[in-house]
Image (tube, rainbow, N blue to C red; front, side):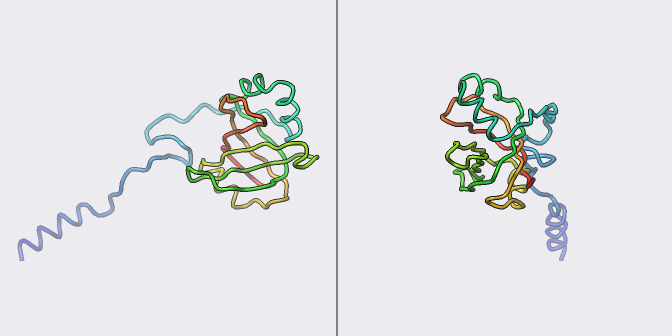
Length: 147
């Protein structure tokens, strides 16, 4: 009986404990680290971002590397992304013919917001560039919401 009591006590002492989370406050950052400084998002449409990108992709990529941009456009497509998120494609007034802006949605707020959006409807995406020059803008989505 005493052995059973000791085993029960040891089991109960471990109950309620779980592995520490790898993110905190809905952000993609390790627990215990300081949150990033608030980002001032430059507001623009898909067409404005594409025009800037077409004028000088290297300058646009450098400008938005780590900087925030809030882009409004039409949700064109949602595809899977290898690391568990989604690849989100937005179009502007000209549709696909005017080229597209792509966002990688891995952040919890972006994934959750994407669940509320519909293909063919307007959306607002807050994201940041990674500094890479591509044929069209590819950004990392922090938040996605229907407009």
